[in-house]
Image (tube, rainbow, N blue to C red; front, side):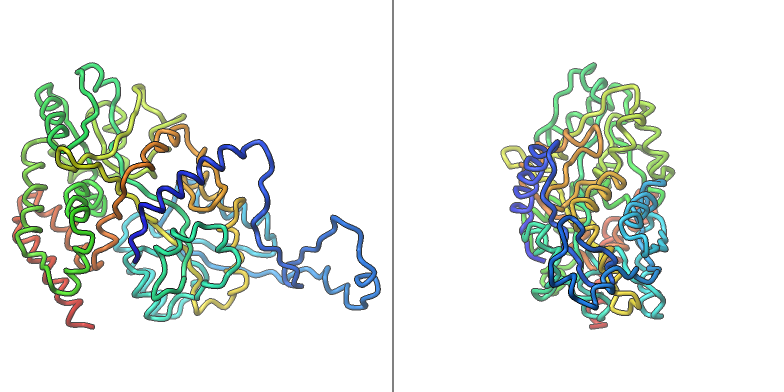
Amino acid sequence: MKKVLAGMLACFLLMSLFAGCNQGSPAPSTQTTDTSASSGQTDTSSAPSAQTEASPASSTQTEEPKPVTITYLTWRANGDSFPGNFVADFEKKYPYITVDYSTTGVDIENYVATQKTRFLSNEDIDVTSIRPETLEDYVKAGYLEELTNQPFLSNYNPSMLDELKVDGKLYSVPSSLNLLVVYYNVDMFNKLGITIPTNWDEYLAVCEKLKANNITPEIAPGKEGWPMYVQSAGFPEELLVKDPDLFKKIDQGEVKYTDPIWVNMLTQINDYYKMGYLSKNVLAYDGVGVENEFKNGNAAMYFHGEWIMGDLSGDNAPSFQVGIFPMPFNAPGEDISLPISIGVSEAVSTSSPNKDAAMKFIEYMSSVEGGTSLSKNLNAFSPVIGVPSDFSPMADKFTALFKLKSVDFFWNEMYSGASSEYYKGLQAMFAGQMTPQQVAEAMQKEQDSKDTSQ
């Protein structure tokens, strides 16, 4: 994928400002109008033309489309809001389409396995959420319908679409932007006179001061496995900043996970844990448990994605003020880079028996109306031009961060087999069952298995 994240951030910032300036006045519609018989909609805003009155076939324009049911497979869920409320909004707009949706939960490995099984067995999948690390493989396997010439793509900035192209063609559309930040207890920081760190040395000093005051510096969920990506992200992200082609070199065999650069990075993660800067019982916490611990004031910081802001604001806000800052994994004198990604995209299956209706679902996601519904129900920043970022009381806190340099999520760049071994290895390493060298060896073994299978 092309490295256009810096331009993407600048474009998103302009999009946010534009949307904010236009609130209160109706935005021009960017949704494609379907005048075919299958749409079931006609333009009644003006008097019929003579040609329409004289046409004996005009009655066909009022025929109701036949009811159809499409399936939607995703791993994402936000209570009743997503997919539930979003699907309900879509079905109000297209009452002849029923969406039978299913979610697998946040276990990414389980989701990908379920998705691959359904693709391979030709089970009904009309629309599905695509993980970044699986996109290219799915395209090469012929699972995804090409979207390159769809009119609704004009609702996105081209730089965002470039991130999703495979061999110059588009097979999915972005549905949200993800970024990683440090959520912190503002009251706790103020009480101890702690200022926001701007580099890694300052961050470690903050951790040391918190620890000296018997406060757990950072808390993280390690029980489920996949959140270990996020908890440890600062360390491999720094490698990616220094060498944007690192994982490409690993894929090509020029660099190995067993090389000192990766083993040393794993050692740094292990040392960070051993120093007591990360909660000792990290492997006992799931996402809900960690959020409760943080909200109860049992840790000062929580490094995670923007997708949890709804759990920490509004009616769900803790008794203390919650602030955010970018994880400063940079060295003194270097710029801070913000981990940001098109975390998920949506695609139509080539085996879908209901492609017209499935495409309507993607078209709705790509409109201002649908993008707004998706943003509010998923508590996520929308990549659709014109959608305001007012889905959460905390959303404004993120605006300034979009001005920073950016770096993609490191796990998006990795072979999925190696990335799975990575988070499993971190769990084992924290449990004292594996050394950094052994984790690296397990990752390289999985990487080698990919190379020999191609």
